[in-house]
Length: 100
Length: 491
Picture 1 (cartoon, rainbow over the protein chains, first blue to last red):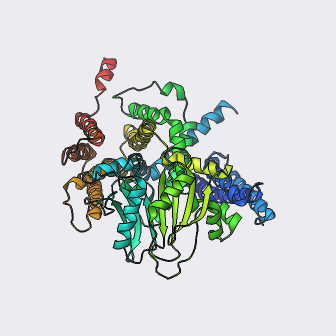
Picture 2 (picture 1 turned 90 degrees about the horizontal axis):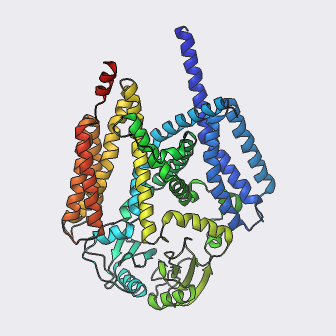
Picture 3 (picture 1 turned 90 degrees about the vertical axis):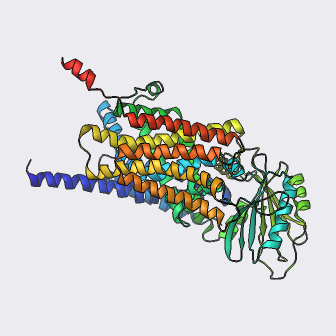
């Protein structure tokens, strides 16, 4: 391999890792936060109770997404997963609306 | 899933485990060490105040405390008191006075601060989740580190091939292999504890780090949220009219009669105001759940305002998760298990940090970055325990009655750890490690022997000193060299 090709390879690897890091940190936190919001609104209990399981489970969802961001076959898939999940939870929270 | 993919998964997990560990390993080491010591927070406080040995009934002790605080504070908005228990005899008081926020351990009879002014175990407790950083940055860093720890644990478990075998595997004096075996054993033996303590720890800071469920349900109406969370805590604005506080002890006895158990914490909000409120929280020492019940009284008249016994399933679940971390429910044997689990986690982190270097050193000369890591390892892993020991020794050496005594103990700890960090960076690791470990052993021994009363604490300190002294001997001798066997093989 020529020096330039090697450099391109190195850059590509770095971009790959960087994309996953952002997906696994900011992306994972956003998914967890939106998950918490969605669950807090759709759980069939009074709101003060609903926030408890929502928060507890969100704190497990976050690390799970982080790990998945690095396991996904490509950074594109990692990001697609983060965006899809985020959109799903955001839509759920938005459709459910704030509790009365 | 094919075997090839599974092997790939394991490699990715090991890679992630290594990097997240390296990134926050030192912070996690400090948190775990301080958290482990916090298991015995009341006992450490007791040891650090040997002059204060009087005992009193919790209600009388709180009465004495409020009497003293009433006479000796100005413009207080709140006094947060913790009643004495079987584990400590003093009243812990955090309160505002004259514009500053103070923490004192109060004598249960006189209500005055203990003569040996010290933060006691509270220093380790605060260090554990605030890391000596201003609010909210310390708690944020602790939250992030906790979540990273959760990732590190899960990836560590997945990366792991043979959980069961590792219970029984230790190959000493073989460099990288031994460090890995040690790291694995420490991690594997107490995996359930590590997972539990890390997750529950993250939960304790969730109102800061994951407030979004609350936001989704309550918007910005935090007053209503707090009312719903703790309906037994009466909230009202100060009236501005001065009325002295009614006797507290009868209210406490009434609360104890109605809530059962014993008195845990007592909050006095707006003391001396006509709208003062006294809230009594039932002690959680006899059950898993945190804050099981509370009752509020009118501070001026002593009349009950509200009462709450927690029995909502979801809230109780959360309280139990929280309580599992705080370990206040734990009887003495369980507390020692928490301590042991904490020690193992602390050592797992430390050995992981060392392993990062050992692994790379055995393959090729270390890069500049890794040489820095190697030296910071010595400085942090050797220096922070030295700082903690120095805190205890300072408690024995700093004279009583001098200005800001408690702060002086804390700065002794911080400056010592800082100096140790400099030593770790400046000296070669083969010198800095035994130096710092030896200094920690010596400091522990001195703290145990100066100004005795003999107690369990002195025994623990002396045992630690002895263990560290043995470690120094090992460090100086260095790992057993192996080329002998290689030469034999070649011959």
